[in-house]
Length: 171
Image (tube, rainbow, N blue to C red; front, side):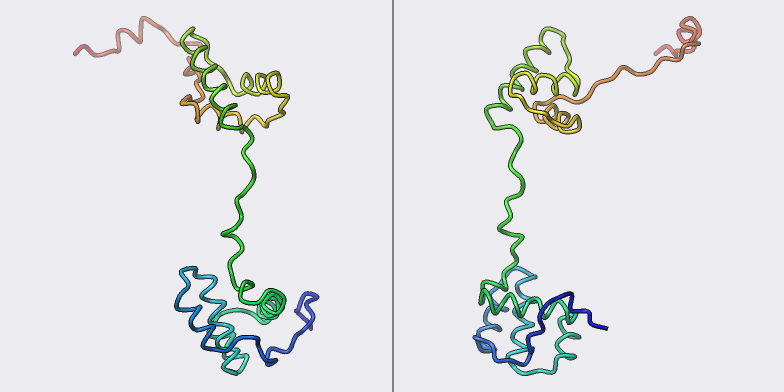
């Protein structure tokens, strides 16, 4: 059965553009574990070690090695880098100015005794900026402004106030 997942099999014994010393230098100089492991793989390939030995030492599988060799042949030494370090992630939903405006509004209303819920934040963002924000994200905005979701503690409908007062200990 062929497990190469559509990767055109490039012979692993084909000459590489760099020699083993270059890969070992990269291996020693790198602080990234992924890059070090990849450099080790290519250093062993450049030394002409048997593929089963390389797979055992590096703990890569054959499919991954073919993918890395393909990437190396296309990008050179840059193909050994871990691309996750360059990923900045998704952009923020609110700009710093919008966050400050929301926080100022929350604090001003709090001074007047008005406590906002996530739904209130959601509605305000829709009115102010035309943004549809998931309810869960609004609680992130509340926490960033220094607020936490507040709910009154539940009261038992059959609670007897006189019995509770009698139960309290005096200090």
